[in-house]
Amino acid sequence: MISKEILFRISRPYKVYSTQKVAAVVIPAVKGDVTILPERAPTMFLLRNGIVQILDSQLKPVEKYFVKGGLADVARNRCAISAEKVFSVDTIDISKAERKRDDALHNEDKAFYQMVIDELKLMNR
Image 1 (tube, rainbow, N blue to C red):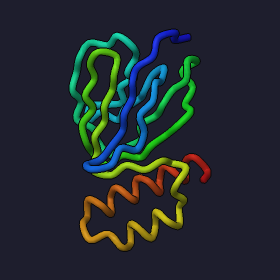
Image 2: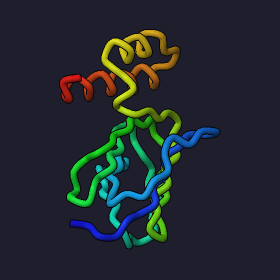
Image 3: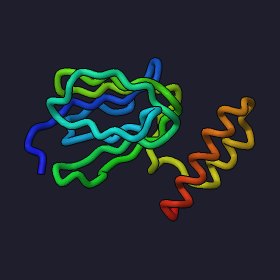
Image 4: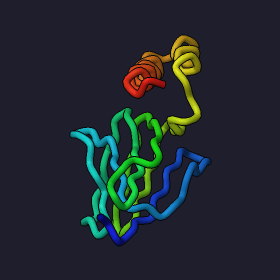
């Protein structure tokens, strides 16, 4: 059980999606998922396409966000994520992700939305 909190912010240029105090955060770092806990040493992480998970004090996921790349800046009990694309897992379904994949102009966007589709299938959504 975690008693301290970190200040978490997730955003993309010109839009903040969430700012809140949380027990922990799991980020999709390029070299593998990393759990950010209170009092972690200052670090910058390059993010890959994946899912950011907000954890409660029992380290159970309570919120999830899809991110397309980005950076995570961790210092002084805060974790600030800035990504090219951000949206809550709760705001998209497979059919919407398939439309976005099919409408995407760039291969990297197509690959991102295919990852979203694959993850949603794993979640049975």
